[in-house]
Length: 206
Image 1: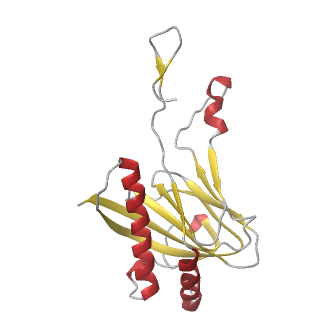
Image 2 (image 1 turned 90 degrees about the vertical axis):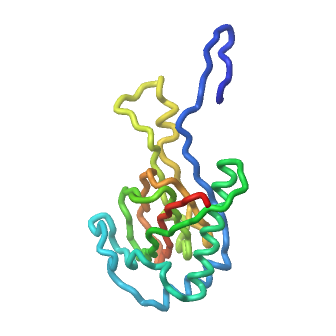
Image 3 (image 1 turned 45 degrees about the horizontal axis):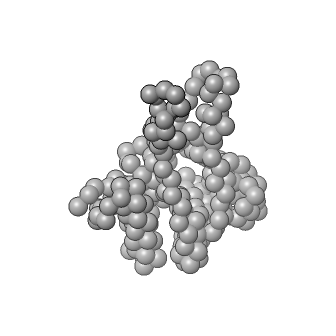
């Protein structure tokens, strides 16, 4: 409770260091992106980045949004619009922001694919867009709390009750999150390809 008064004292209890996430949904966009990504017939880790933490994944280079394809231009416009909505709500203003997509890529996860714990450097906001979630009972994205402790007792139980947030994939779901959040893709056990797009953004107010 932010700023709530402790009864009988002059103290208060404050909630500090908030972390914000947002979700949007656009299933129609996912359909078009799936057709385009499948047509590329890519294989291997083309980005050649952090290959040791990626298993049974195909990954594009980190310049996916540079494509001149209409579906990509449409996607970039949608993702930027979602980020602007998030920031305007966060800052309680009505402003225009310049969204620079620093990196952009896609993953195609095969059966038993996994992407171990990592975070995204060189940006402020990141996004994951589920193009084809495959078997949605597996392959969740798990976000880890940025607040850690090397000691555990009942006094800091609240930290460990909320140390991980699991996002269940769904076609057309977009998750926006701050770049400092560590996260991972849990083991995907489905037979259908699990396809996601990811991006990193630098944002400036115009």
